[in-house]
Image (tube, rainbow, N blue to C red; front, side):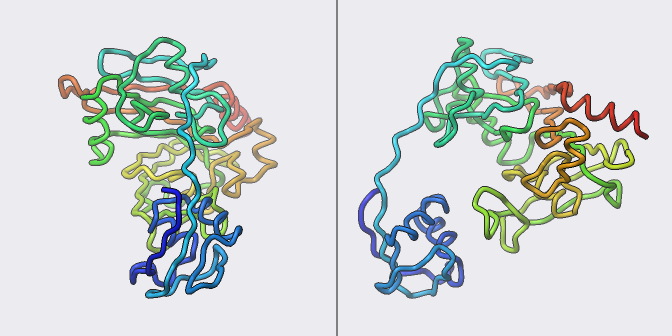
Length: 309
C-alpha cells in the first residue's frame, strides 16, 4: 500500500481528527497516521496538517504512504505456565498466564500463545493472518485465563462466526476498586480509541457498541469482586467500562487504579481473569464449558482483602 495517494475527504469524515479519519479511510493504525503527519507526509489542500487537526469534507488529502511492514513471524518458543485444558482434532483450550501475548505483533518481543503451542507441537488452523493463525479471540497481555484456539479450518470458521454472533459465553472475574452501585447491572457505553492516548481506549460518543453485564459476588472494605459477562468483545472493554464508573480494576494503573492499593495487595497488573468460556463445539454442536482457577497473585490479593474485612 506504499506510494502517493490523492483523495477528497468524504462527508462521513467531516470534523474528525486527521489521525482518526485517515485511519478509517485508508485502513491504517492511528499511530502510523500520526507518524506520517509528524513527518509532513499528510497534506490537506496543499498544506501540512497535524494529527489532531480536523478534517473538512471536500478538502483534498495528499498522503505519502510508507512501505508495508514485513509480516511478524511466529517463533516456536516454549511458554512457562501455558497449560492445555482440553485438546481434540478441532480445538485447543488453554489457560493463558500473565505476561503472554496471544500472537506476535510489531514491538512485542515476549512470549505468545501461538508460539507456545507451536513449540509444544500443537498444529493450529492456517486460517487468519500469518502471525495469528487459528486465533479466534484474544486476551490482554496482563489478563490471565481460559481461551480457545482453532485447530481445524472448520473450527476456525465456526468459532469466528460464534464470537461475531455473540453465541459464546465469556465470563470474567474482576477485582474493582470501591463498591459498584447497583451491585448488579449492565454497562452499555460505546468504546473507541482514546482521543488523546493511542495506547488506551475510552467511552466515546459514536464509538463501537459495547455491553458489559456484571454482578458483585463479594465485597471488601476497599474493593469488590465482580463476575462479568461480556455481550460484546471490545479491546480493554471490562477495564474501560469499570474505569468509566470510577471503579477501575485493582492494579490497572493505565486506567486510573490506585497504585498504593495495588502495592499493598501485591498486584502488579490489572486484577482481571477470564474465568469461564463456553461455546458450541464445532464438531457436533454440543455445548462445552471450560474454567480456569485464579493464578497465585490474584488469589493472594483476595486472601489479603478477606483477612482485612
